[in-house]
Image (cartoon, rainbow, N blue to C red; front, side, top):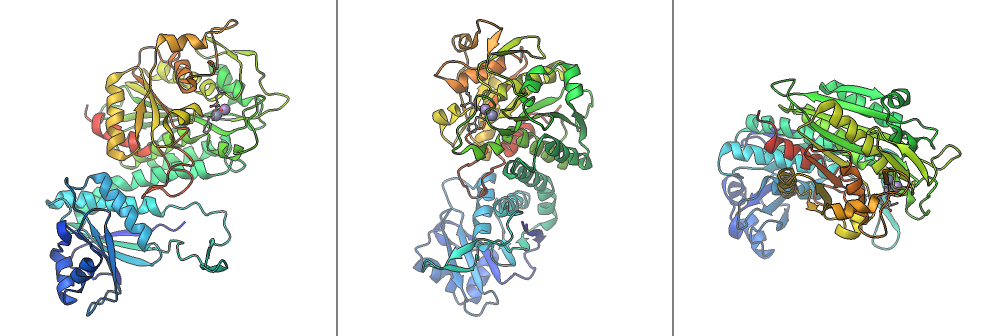
Amino acid sequence: MLLPEIEFEPLTAALEATTVVFAGDGGTLSGLAAKLDKASGGQLRRAGEAARFKGKRKQIYEVLAPHALEQVRIIVAGTAGSEPMTRREWADLGGRIAGRIGEVEAASVVVEAAGGAKAETAELAARLAMGAMLRLYTFDKYRSAPPRKDNGNGEPGEKSAETPKLARLKIHVPDPAAARDAFALLEPLARGTMLARDLVNEPANVLGPVEFAERCADLATLGVEIEVLEPEALEKIGMRALLAVAQGSVRPARVVVMTWNGGKSKRARPLCFVGKGVVFDTGGISMKPAAGMEDMKGDMGGAAAVAGLMHALAGRKAPVNAIGIVGLVENMPSGSAQRPGDIVRSLSGQTVEVLNTDAEGRLVLCDLLWYANERYKPRFMINLATLTGAIMVALGKEHAGLFSNDDKLAGELAAAGTATGELVWRMPLSAAYDKLIDSKNADMKNIGGRFGGAITAAQFLKRFVKDTPWAHLDVAGVAMDSTKTDTSQTWASGWGVQLLDALVADHYEKG
Ligand code: BES
Ligand code: MN
Ligand code: ZN
């Protein structure tokens, strides 16, 4: 993968042969864009009129070989709408632009007065840069050659022109230093998102629990404290439910605790983020059907988002205390695997009758949630998990399912979802649903009945959180095989990193 070097330049700096400018309502060109138009004898404007360009956002047109300009290609993108463009829309626009110019080696983007004030323009230009980076993320490390594009005649064509070649992206702004500062806080967010994508895209033969833990350990370079718990330690602590899932695999479990103590008071109660990290989910003895099982390499999407978030928080030195905990196991059928009917004692002391070994994520999470709550007394706990197929039946691939015992936290997550585009939709919890997981032989069973599968899974988790504000995000539909967007083009989306970084930044960094 090639990601461009992002450079913030003054408006007076030389423009690359491919240059992008923005237009307002009706296609008005101002500042540097107006100067280019004038130098071309009004060709930019006329081309816009010919293309019926009205300056509306998402409208875009190109002028090739403009008269009397050094540039060989000018791209004009609209920014007008009823409201000024949000930060997220600038990131999306960055993604859309990167999708167009990815095949050239260098390009200029002129962001002259995006938000009026210089500081606002700097921030929005940085958002644009982040969006461009996210768009250009690819997962091609196992390809010997880029895919060939059909040449239109049903024959294999040239090497794909769509393989990104963009090595340098110059963003021209009134105050480059301010834009650089703004981008310094956003680049870690982009890198964290890409870390999450890498972990999810990586096949399970390469990324087992041990290898995942090693990638987490790399965060030490950012100042994250890393603690890796091996099976012996997990046994001693009493995480028997988690270990029961791992026992069928030849690859031993790992739990990684990542600590970022950036808060003013190192002793302030932390925020806790907990991730399901099933590196591969065959279903175990209750085995899944063959078709599509390969997707279960992504069953660690929750853990990947937690690792990505810790990267983002530490990378931008967020003034907050945060703990990331991931439970890394492989769910395999074998002579040592757990059986349907087995009863395990979880760390909490509550016993669980395992009626279906494919409902393994909750067994991993229940021990982690209990552990996090007892050890840290956190301000809140948020867990992310590719927990149920049922959540996709309910919500499709547009929203993650949100379950929470706390209206304030749920509201903050919903707002962060709207701000980042990582949408959540609240689902119900109640005593009536809780009853569905009562067991004849143990304190609870690990599956409910035929209906409400995402809800009974959430009720199960809730039995391990006491009164701590808690939210469970069921990300089965959004972490992988996700809807392609302006800023997300691979199988793995890195879903959750942007959402939780925004949640922390908007509500938990003061005091
Ligand atoms: N990892 C799966 C859920 C999943 C399915 C995620 C498809 C992404 C795509 C989870 O461990 C699982 O198997 N859940 C079962 C629960 C059932 C046995 C109660 C499911 O959803 O079928
Ligand atoms: Mn499963
Ligand atoms: Zn699973």
